[in-house]
Length: 172
Image (cartoon, rainbow, N blue to C red; front, top):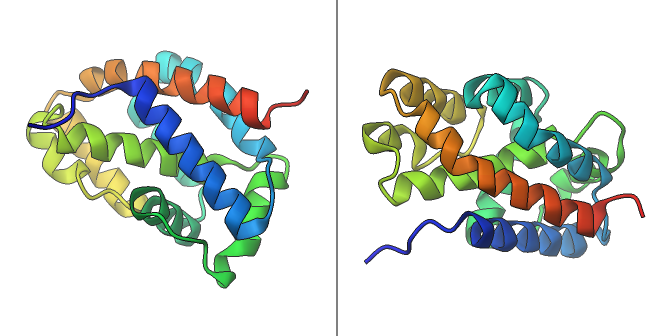
């Protein structure tokens, strides 16, 4: 029997796993840009909708780093040497953080799909791991009429991500 969708637990697991990746891969304990992006995410979802928000993140993302982070968030591991600089830049540079947040969103979409909460659109969302597959997932959500359901399921997840990233990486 599949585990029930628990957005807060998923957020805790995902952010703690990202924190482990961050510490083990680049030896940092902060990702200020993720905290800034996550602070905006719940309101952006509410104001613009899932497709518009995700497309914005896609337009600002590093696809190679995205693939690496999605894989690591799903299966554990460490960032390869060629991605360490990208992750470091993504966490520290002003105006960044979109790739990390998109990877976190991808993990949530995969979970929703694996639990059958996205109906037929879930077939396109179960293996999201890069900008192309995320775009296909978004298209399917809209075409199958489950975009609003996905937004309602993701809203508490993004609020929990916001709170956790503020606590771990926010300005204090």
